[in-house]
Image 1 (cartoon, helix red, strand yellow):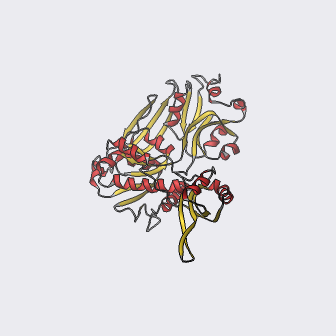
Image 2 (tube, one colour; image 1 turned 90 degrees about the vertical axis):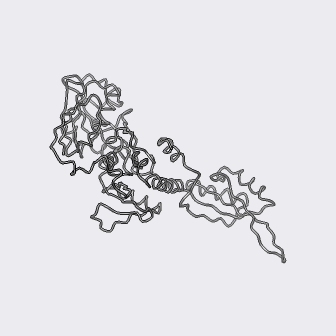
Image 3 (tube, helix red, strand yellow; image 1 turned 60 degrees about the horizontal axis):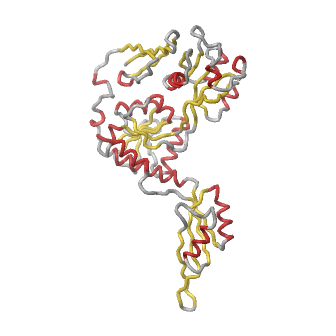
Length: 395
């Protein structure tokens, strides 16, 4: 295995040495030009490495990597369950499971950053992780295909934060931070972060001349108070932890907006049998469920002379247009031995936030017997995301 030391030279006269431990030689990321890497390697036999270039075609099963711990892990399982793709894990201590609805698919529970690395190495075909993790460890690699970029959970953003006090008290924007006279070649801005690719890349793009980075995992908010950093680059959800540690975000300091995403290996999609079809099914189930989230079916009866007349009344109300328009159909009944139609059934889809207003508008134009039920799926025509994937693959 490889033991690597990365020396961040930014600018070249100031540097911080940062350890990257236990990375395989095949997992070394492509770093920006202003970072120099000095690797040392321990020899190992080729048979001991799981990162063989032939691993994509050697195995028969399709592999999906899911987060193994934390809130993202539980929310991922919940989303898949809502899509009728429940993960069955015989033993909670095992790192492998299955989804019975998807034949020939194995689920592997991994750390999110390892999911990215194993997608690149060919040991996984699909994976779910945060966009921040994908961007940090994937670094724009063309073999990583973003299948779905908005799974609607795990929301956070990667941001720069500085103290509220001292020399930073009146600093409220990234440009003001960059222009502070305190930062020189001899005394650069010190930034603590676990994002050793995105952090330096962003600061360089924003024109910072004198800045150094130190690696830290966990409790980054304490670094400025301890005097070991002037600023931090970290993930922010609600901002509560920053405020409780007397830190603040600044204008222009957001590096990346992030949420959970579904990613596939381009090589797997092209070379491995079944991966493309499985990816298509997972994408369709996800999109159908996410599109239906917060939508309700509203059904009501309305008296009218014709379907067109009823439809005209419905469409006169702004909240009753539905997805593509109302469905209006006759309600038949038998009177005096004859089948007649005096009422029409109306079916529309409305978002949760407009539900009560829609019911009020329906009753105002003669609707009665209003029934409401939540939607589980909305399957539309072929999704733009799938068309984009096929275009990327040249299919």
